[in-house]
Image (cartoon, rainbow, N blue to C red; front, side, top):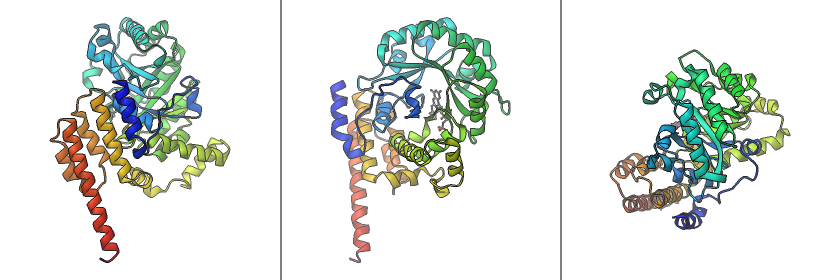
Amino acid sequence: MSSDVDSLISQYAPAADLHDIVNPQVPFLDSCKDMPFLAAPMAGVTNSAYRIMNRLGGAQYAYSEMVSVAGLCMKNQATRELCLPHTAEPNLIVQLFGSDPVQFQRACALVGELLGDKLSCIDINMACPVPKVTKRGEGSALMCDPHRACALVRACLREVRVPVTCKIRRGYYMDHESAAEFGRALQDAGASALAVHGRFAKQLYKGEANWESIKRVVEAVDIPVIASGDVMSAEDACRILYKTQAHAVLIARGTYGNPWIFDDALKIFNKKKLLLKGNPSDLSALLDAGLYNSSAREHNRHAHITDTHSISARLNALELHLRLLAATHAHMARARSLCSWYLYGLSHAALWRQKFMTATTLDEFLHLLQAFKEQVQTDKQVSQEMSSGR
Ligand SMILES: Cc1cc2nc3c(=O)[nH]c(=O)nc-3n(C[C@H](O)[C@H](O)[C@H](O)COP(=O)(O)O)c2cc1C
């Protein structure tokens, strides 16, 4: 299986503007100083094929989907597979969810055994707002039970030598911002860093993420903070970093159809660092003045991707992603949303999205993709002929 994936990468990545996976030589958190853009955990999305695409686009670290500690303790095979990196992945941050310290400790032992040196960090999910999870006191519900949340951190620390971090929200109830106080308690319990999603749990994913609330956590704790929320473009990734003064950034929905976002963000980050000799407050002023970010592009993911990556690179990336899904034995139903994301903003996308919705096998997806590529080619020829007046 690994050689399949390796040969797919060497065969298809160059035409998709993607490069080899980089394995950082410094520990997680230290490496964020120079490479602050991380591939966020997304249940139902960030399987190994998805993470490999993000790594090829420049992410130095990627999180697993959230993994149930109860499932791991029951030796559930599907749960175990969620936290297994593919051989092509040099490292992985495993995110665990649950509420029982004993189960967390056992799960950490198992994950440590399964991953060995590939385990970079254990992250505890204290952010998931889904009622199925919160009604059991798990995910964001832990923000209402700081004693238990701290006990989970201590339980993990008893078992692993890698950093233990927590992902939290701005607060649980609407307009009750508790992240700073809660974050301090987690720090005292031994958490090495906090990822903060600037929305209340009750907001789910609606409304705007409040970056000021993330900054308040940065000011309240002494450990690194990783900012999350509304990072839809490479510019957003740099803007949230400097607006919040966070240590690193999680890129979640901004990766949809855009695995290059990590490299693109790093280019802006390095350029600005050079320009300002690393003075973040100057950079913040520069961002406000809009000197490097055209406000017309704000939250315009499509404009951003098409400016930087050709249609042909986007369609080649989709092809690689589809092939990786099949090579890693993922369910091909996942390919439907991928097609819709990579086609975002292209001509005839709505019609083709419907066609992709009917596909079930790799061959069917590839066949439709080939037909779409031909349509793009025909459109290009017609428009060239029209502009040359033929
Ligand atoms: C489909 C989906 C699944 C997610 N699953 C998880 C998860 O398993 N664990 C977690 O901590 N956050 C999860 N998140 C939250 C993201 O990691 C991120 O914090 C959130 O989407 C805010 O970032 P964004 O507005 O830039 O997308 C998920 C988000 C989405 C959209």
